[in-house]
Length: 115
Image 1 (cartoon, rainbow, N blue to C red):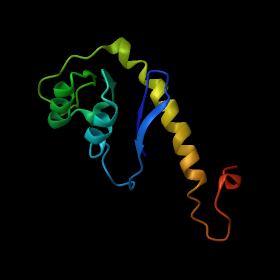
Image 2 (image 1 turned 90 degrees about the vertical axis):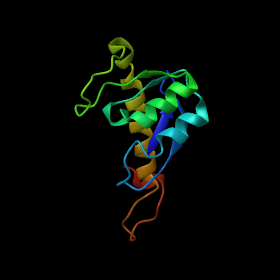
Image 3 (image 1 turned 60 degrees about the vertical axis):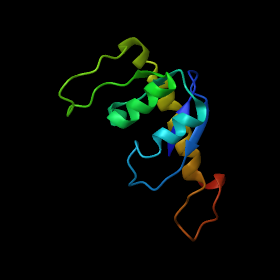
């Protein structure tokens, strides 16, 4: 699941894709849907094309540089600490998603299987 959340961790936009899809693939489209002023993301989102699309939107990028980047880009480390709120939100949504995707055909699907 790919998720955009606000500063309080409330989901604004999401997309569910197969597990093998890299995080960066749906990122441009999701960010374009909400037109963020500031984006906090992990190193997986440190891609030149993605950063260019964020700059075009006037979006502040709080993304640490990937180890493969020869020149490290600066980011606000204090703002980056707030990313934990987004991680909690993502974890909650993923748990709900699992409740509706039980793969055992012998049991009914739904929230009652979440326990």
